[in-house]
Length: 306
Image (cartoon, rainbow, N blue to C red; front, side, top):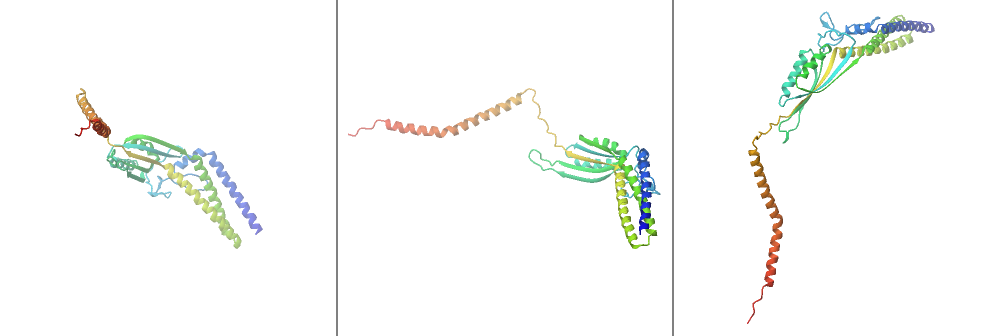
């Protein structure tokens, strides 16, 4: 048992040295690795080739991205994750046609809709029609990102635009170096398992193989995520429908119609003031009149009786 453990330690140390050399080689040749990542074959040193969604082999899409179109051209330069948020204002009663126009632009540029959420606002006295607003999320090939932004800007009035980019070259190289090291250790464990005869040794090796296998799958998932997000860019468009334009009233160059309107308004306002004043003073006038009549009646001379 001790001899086996010594042998296992020596083998693992040799594998670690080989993985370190692979990591150093990847760090020194970072530019080449980044270019290799763009062409669909990231990482060397015994690692499996991880292809981008646009790479095909024998007419079939590889890299586990069958849900993404396979006609994406290869990117040039370092891998960058680009995203954009846009806010567009469209005319009244044109929301449906503008939404269809956005979908057509996305399909023409080789992208796909990831989600759509549209709703209509409430109508009221000042706004008799229901104004609609919506949010469209979609993905387009990274090579068509700028062209798509330009086309979307023509759909309506551009209210706001926010574009971000994240360079993931260093992360890409690091993940592929770690994947190569993990796969090398996996092969060592498999070779030791084939030669092991002790039950405890077999169980220990199988546990190690399970852990290293989970690590390999995790690294592959992270690499695939970078592949998809550098090959395709996310764009979010918030589209709002503006209210109808209020038509201005006809101008009165001579001012005659305006004067007549103001005179009629003043006449009605004067009558309103008079009626309101009479309503407020009327009861007081009646009471004063009744009091005066009573006072006169008392002051009047009484008739003399014979």
